[in-house]
Length: 427
Image 1 (cartoon, helix red, strand yellow):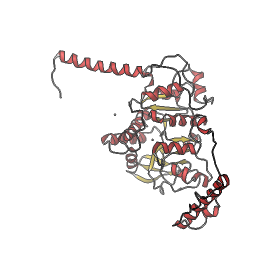
Image 2 (cartoon, one colour):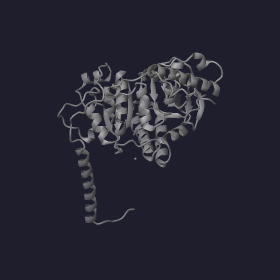
Image 3 (spheres, rainbow, N blue to C red):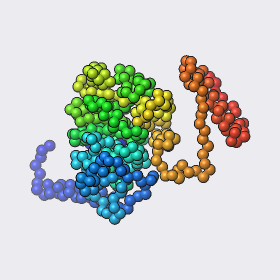
Image 4 (cartoon, one colour):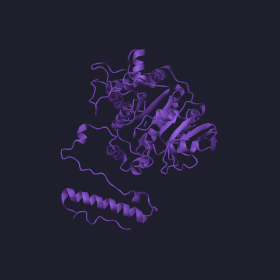
């Protein structure tokens, strides 16, 4: 998920007020600069991989001198070099131009509490050869660490706390509003924007897929848990009942998209109790239901002019369709992304889910337990999964089959089933 009475006064009074303001700016600047006192690069939490693709990094370094904007990802600044001034981290058109490729920029944002998620997000993209990315830092601690790690970063100016704020908290909603403000800041630069939450990872380069729908103003993910298509086409928007999820969505810098972004910003700023995702869904459904002629997968929405498409939940997965259903496996499709929604235990639950799927990047020692690990591959008969009606009885038959299998494996390794022999569930 991330990420705004005229009165006369005497000359001495004016000078005093002016002096206080200037003094305040000076103190803030000193505090900001002191946070960058050391320039020693920290150790990376996983092996360094400097991308060598022929896209952004290679082209930019041959066309112009290397700068902090076009430096290859994972290449830290030279040891002993000075930290750039705070002004250098401001989000500008030139910064986006230096990193964009084929008119597209991929962006996420967060605070220091999500640094391991952000590094995982970046590592997945660079592993796929995608380096046209930027990360927005909501606090100076994250800004500093990402810069020293060699990740292209900009300052969002949020001055956010560095701790995990927790889903649904007031600070969580503030982060959501920051996302809306960021989209409004980026779209006028004229680049396509793939905006992502930090609690998701890319498993396949999504840019060729998004390019299949060049006339779409907006392509959004959703919380749909029932597939409306069985191939890799966009969802059938007529049958989508889940909310549109703003953790993964692709914006084109068209006038309808810019108008939607502005109205969205005005709406969330007007009331800090409005959840950004609910506001987005309300706006896009103001006008909805007219298919785009010749492109039936797209629908006119919002003001009747914005062309919207819904990314298939089977391959742009939620936590439910990926971890619980394994929908991509059932449909024999290659997933592009997984967003850790529908998860228990907050941020720790999200981290665990990604680790469980081997999608999270940790120190090698995390996976090198001295006692090793016990693992097994379940073998469930297809008839139990697919045949007959899905009832409570068939559900518990499946549960008990898996429990019995686990007891058998436990017995093979430990020679005792007394602890678990009664673990059979009934209705």
